Image (cartoon, rainbow, N blue to C red; front, side, top):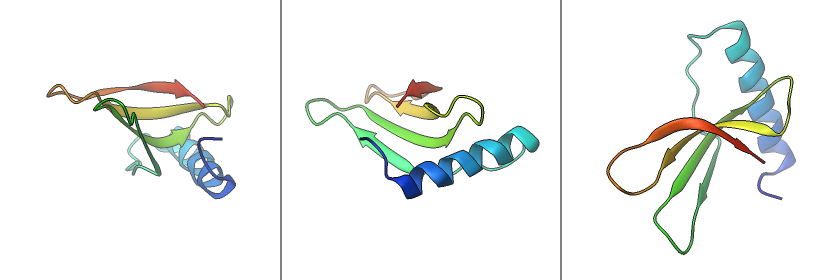
Length: 72
């Protein structure tokens, strides 16, 4: 399991609020990292309709970051 029940609840609420208000300021709830590399994923919210898709900001450690989604 990558996230706790409390983190999942917070991320679902963030996803619902962002769906209602696209100007909602999403703050990272979970930080994941690759212990054998330099990548870090900052998870902010879960899709309110598909509860196992998280929005993320990936920082692969090569000087830039990417916005995307990740299955959890």
